[in-house]
Length: 92
Image 1: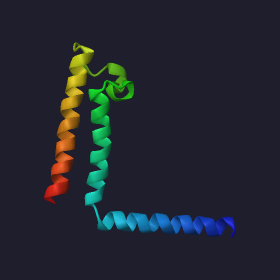
Image 2: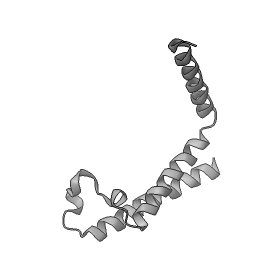
Image 3: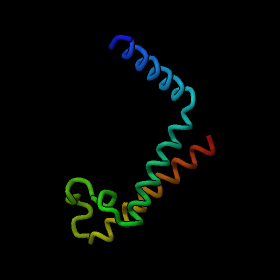
């Protein structure tokens, strides 16, 4: 088996996976829900990577907020996104 054969096998498997993903879009919502659930858990348990605010903590809207307030805003946004993904998964 040459390198070209290995590449063709991997490429064929990737093609089949993306065809399956296009035929079953609901599972993309489930995958997004799982990622959001991990992020939500990290926010609740105050994991450093989950609570890190984007842009180095310099978002003009939240400049005067305490870190706990920023964490609560993130919790609200992530939970809304999680609820939206799960609702679309079960309704569609």
